[in-house]
Amino acid sequence: MKDKQPKAEWHLQVETDLNALTSILEWLENIVLPMIPADFWWQCRLIINEGFTNAVRHAHQNLPPTTPIDIEVKVFADYLEIRIWDRGQPFNLEAKLHSIMQEQRDPLDREGERGLVFMYKLTDDLRYIRTEDRRNCLVMRKNII
Image (cartoon, rainbow, N blue to C red; front, side):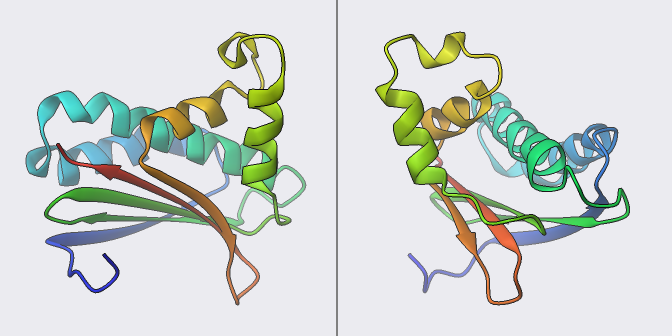
C-alpha cells in the first residue's frame, strides 16, 4: 500500500492545547467528510479526538504549550490515514495495549486508558513510531468500506 498515491492529503499544525480540538475536528470535517461514507465519520472523529488528547495530556505533559503537534490526513481509494506527531518521550504502544488487554476487568471500564482501546478497536492499523527527527508519530489507518 505504500506505493499508492493518496486522492487527497492535508496538514495542520496546532499548539499543545486541548482547546484546539474543536478547530481540529471542524477542519477534519470540512476536508474529509465529503470524501468518506457518512457513517464512517463518527469513528474518524473519535480516533483523532483520542490521539490528539493523548498527545496533549501524556506526550506533551511536561512541554511548553507552544510545542507544536502536527496532524496529517490522507485519503486513499480504500482507506483513510491519520498521523499525529508529538515531541514527547517514546512510548511503547504495543506493550501498553497488551498490558491493558491482559487485565481481568473490561478495558472499557478504565477511565484513563480507554482511549487507546477505542483507537485500537476502531482502526485497521495502529502504530506509534519514533521518527529520525526525534518526534513520535501515531499512525491510524481506517479502511473505507
